[in-house]
Image 1: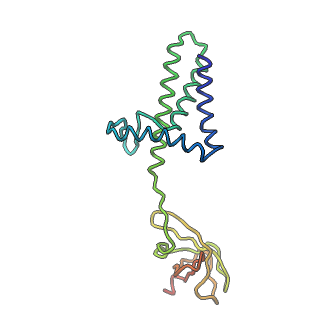
Image 2: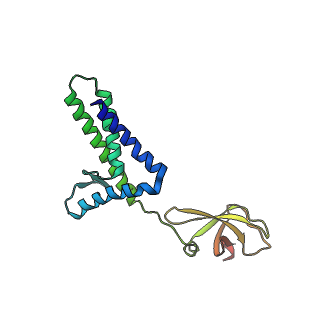
Image 3: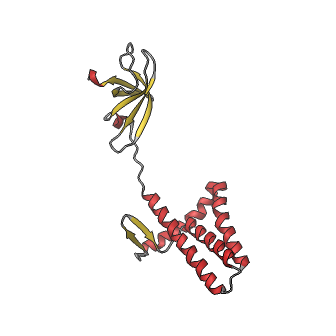
Length: 190
């Protein structure tokens, strides 16, 4: 049994490590396991349940969750190998490996649901901004634009009135963008 535990640990560490090193080549392997997971979704057999806003999968079929389960199974088995009741040791190792696979699959599902909102430069014109680094007369500074959902974006900026500088922490309105430079105007001037 000790060899089995060692092999499971090597697989649990080796496959993610190979993926990390080889990247694109191993996408085929990951795609295979994701395809197996997709087959179960097509059967309309629900092995998942919701706890609040958490989605828990009782049938973890992603390569990451399988590797985590194998790693925990092997590690727990190696720790308990010298106990008297080997059947109990195997049951404990399998249970903890399966639990880890469920936890990893749940985290993967949660991370896939996270939405990343990005805004175009035209959409950023709708939001108020604040000068982060003072804009010197005829020169540049930087502006920070914060959206309603808390996303903050910074751009190099210059004043629409090139003879006038704008001090740090001044609230401004972005009028337009010239390439990647925000052209701004003080809020009082609007």
